[in-house]
Image 1 (cartoon, helix red, strand yellow):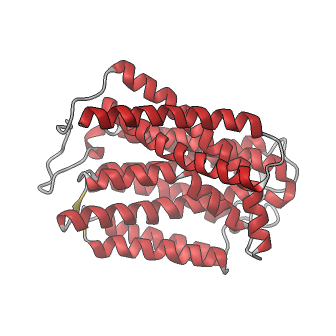
Image 2 (cartoon, helix red, strand yellow; image 1 turned 60 degrees about the vertical axis):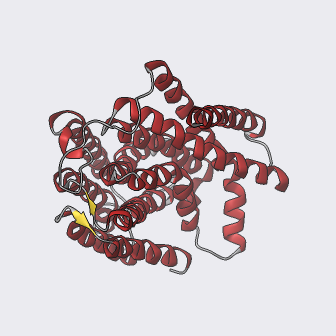
Length: 366
């Protein structure tokens, strides 16, 4: 029975992203009528689920923390491509899209995915246990990157508005790349054990016991299909984005809501994978996914938009407004208090989810 379920999962997870890419080819750059938008949305959802499936296959083969890193980096690379593409197409009206999308990614990962993972893990075992050393290092890096890239531009005076001067933008891009590179080296080499799942007694789990790892050929196939799935996710998201923008404008909502929707769509694979890991008592894996995605989102997006800004018309607005800086400060404070003990209860997860809810409310009604 188990083999039959796996065979069916492999079949649909291969077919759906391939068909999604074919649909993407036929609809790219063309006006899309309403019924086709619905079809795109269905294949978008299927591609998200396929991406999660293939990411879990790869993660099972390479083990932690490499598996979490694969999904986080792969999704973020495509996210960056989507942001740059939309900014290039939109001109000045999308000058704050990078800021809105990156901040949305930070709030969704650090409060939404973290909160949901802690809630699921603690409801199952009463207390969710994770490694405070590795999680603390990841959260400190996310906090530093967010502060340098999103908070600092609001207070600089070299350029008008919440934006960096050229020299400041170069520094922010260089710092983002350097910090992200140091973190990856720490996570995968020097202190890999800090990012491995732990038992309720605090013992490191270095070997998965629930099933044999897939073969090298299966893992490589899933890695390729993961890339296809992510291309389909972002491509289809771009295809439905005009409908999203029109809907946002028709509803009288702020333009920043578009960035929130993009972040929600792109981070869906990590969200599902993180919850599944938490249900398997692998809360550390969930936190690796959440914080790794937040870090990659900033560490890759800021250098990319810094380079792309050379060819873009209009300003590049990165600084947050006062309300969002308050939310960022609360996220840093609550996240620190969450990580220090290395253990969390359902209340902790609820606190993080309430911060995400506050962000979503302010996004709709500033």
